[in-house]
Length: 318
Image (cartoon, rainbow, N blue to C red; front, side, top):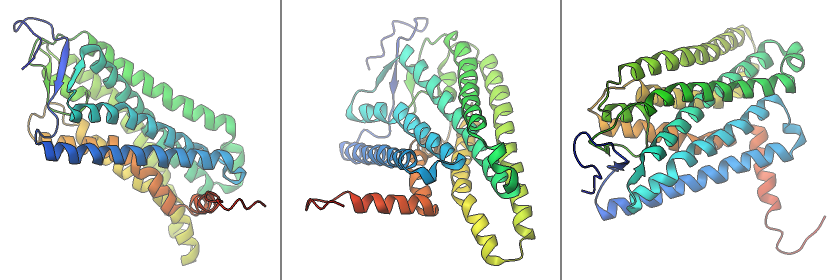
């Protein structure tokens, strides 16, 4: 099996991903499926970032956060998908240090995204509930501080869980029944007692998730109460439509992420765990730009203009 360990007390120097399937036909299908998802993720999020950067009318706090969300989605997908493609292709091993590093970046980016989503929710609350003070509250400096704070929270959370994991002993088995090095999976493989790691993760993740989700919930409860006071059905629809795309993304990310990470000691339902991981770390980064493109009129119009300008093969100039 190429386990690379002498006995039960030897230190594991590499891990082996079990993957999804050993059937060549299934592997080929999965390889091209995930490759397609990754390409769409890169193209979609880069397009969103370019449109926001190049269009002056989109230089507002909402699109500032959306641009950063697109960058985070590119990072999130790039941490997991290239290695997943290599696994499917046949390179199923990863070094101990490489596995810890991947785990660190997954925690960093996932936590950062939760706080960027919270910042976006607060931005919508301010725009809808405090429109007269919106420009003053959501100034560029404050927006940058929110994004910087999101990355700081992500780094702190990742580091506080990575350092205790480095101290764990791994003496076998070294088979990861998953496609990436996520903290719950690694803890089940340790021959040390992971009690402190479990507590550290539950406390840090619980506090951060509670805080970020409370901001989102509080923001949207205030928005809903305001919407209910609006008498015009058309005005009510327009107000809600500005939040709908963000609500869909929050639901996708929080729902699948929480279901995955709150099952630390789960040895069963491996297929469901892989499904949840694929959803929040691979599918959601691809869906985010698609959802915003379909639900946001300004982004939709900018994309249409971009498409119209691409094929001037006849050499026509303005």
